[in-house]
Length: 276
Picture 1 (spheres, rainbow, N blue to C red):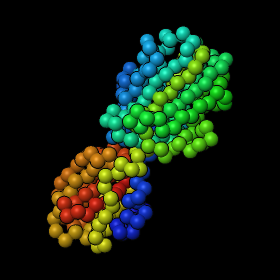
Picture 2: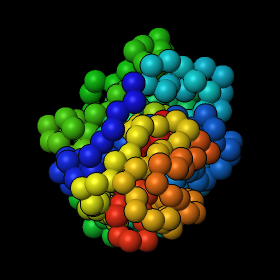
Picture 3: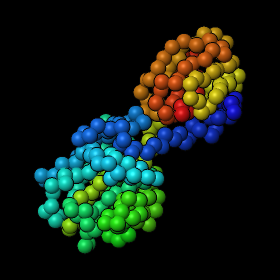
Picture 4: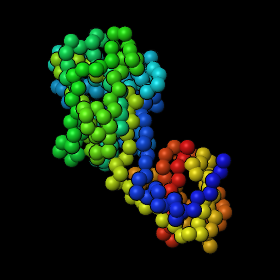
């Protein structure tokens, strides 16, 4: 059902809390790559432990997208079996802040057995300074029986470790295990943009209306008094499209990736819409 939104009312609810939460399951990423891009944001991955590697890996049925097994995930070098644990990082390539909501980790020995004992540490950093630290040494999924979650342990950043870290701005996430947990795979990485990094406020004259929202193919704006130049930006501030539009004319958005966008007119009016 199409709905028409009065933009001045919309701004009261959306300009302060714009969300672009996304879950990266790595299924479209390049195998052996040391970076990935999700919802317009590029991330870099790498090993901290000497001699190890960290990259996008694939094996049929060995991942977990949050509801079922999949094929691609992040992991470290399977050849590492020196019983000193694993350590790698995920960071934004451009240094922009993000928040982590949840993820799944497969914690095991190199030959896929349950570690006899290990401590998992997850540290969030911002500009090199520690923002939060989560430690976990019990409650891991069973990697031998692959239960639950195909052997992956769910890490909920709103509650793991007894503290809500799900809205804390970071630019780097570091994972470390100890003892025989030499193998560490990661999948279903759910993250969001920093709530303090939004570039555009939603603002428009009271006569402007647009529909549909969310949309799949187009948005149509009414209330324009003249032909207007416009630009479309994603949540990170990257220009995705531009053009000219007149009153009640449709603007095609079907080729945009799914996500949150801002339609900014030359006269200063700005609309927020969601592409599905």
